Length: 312
Image 1 (tube, rainbow, N blue to C red):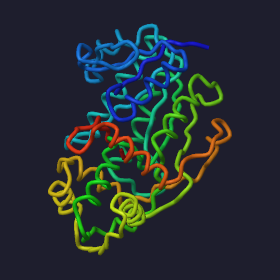
Image 2 (cartoon, rainbow, N blue to C red; image 1 turned 135 degrees about the vertical axis):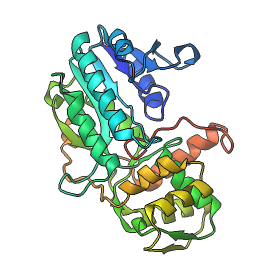
Image 3 (cartoon, helix red, strand yellow; image 1 turned 180 degrees about the vertical axis):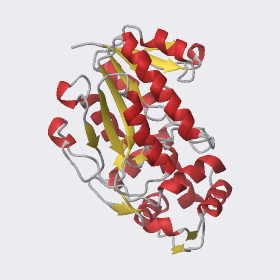
């Protein structure tokens, strides 16, 4: 059944792929952006800002389902900023009559000492539903796709370095997921009453270390191995500076992401596969697709749409 849908972050990495999928499914899609006059994608552009509650109330009026894809990692006070935005969005959604909020958060064991990045994601989950609108949460680790910031870090490290002196987080386990599978799950929980108020973990079929990801990406991208030498004394601050020198990620975003890379982020609950069945792409398939999309976009010096969440 067709519904009126709002997608925040419509011009970002995830949102720019989700909007066309929802339009293709027959929904009336409002693409929320701070600059509606410059929006050229599908759906209907609507101007609003999560930092402006009045604009949110106007954007959410009459909306039935809302996707929340907003994260801030490029400022030191991102936790407070994201908390305020989530609380305002939840209240405006309640006032507008929204019946489901769908949020893409980050994987990570709640029993662990979570990084500020992942801890903020957990807080946003709670604050979005504080006003009473049911929230469906999908928790993911690294999303592999052209334009995702974590994937771009991987790709650029492999492209620019013949060998890597890497921080100890290269041994941390993670469960990357292909961009098409993220979109499939986001669409799959749409207006499903059994998903209201639920948290689902989503990931690809393989658990890998960051070292595994880098080495396999190197073989697919450069058709050779890239030696990786872990250095335990390379701190998060030094690591973020190292990333800023070698990739185009800014130091603050890099620092916030690196802080999360000490947390193991793997799927423990695969109940999403019963609700949204389908075989997820493996890591090599996801990398090939990301590289092909980059080539099709015209790529080497083209700036892609970026996202920092969940881990990009």
